[in-house]
Length: 66
Image: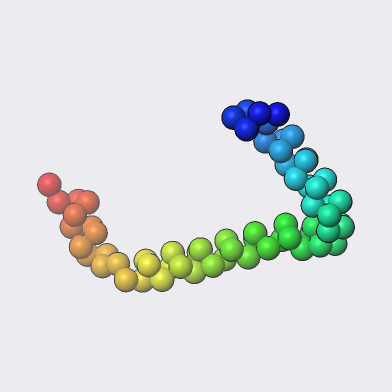
């Protein structure tokens, strides 16, 4: 495969899982895949912190005032 060619997502996923399993085994592969779920929680927390600093009245005024 040339560097500029892409494989479809399903094939990419299957190859990646196979390589991870061959290199680390099924347990460590599973652990690795579950790590990505933890980042989702952090992004939600970060988003909620960002929202807590917003001024609802200013936003409503900007959106609903002509």
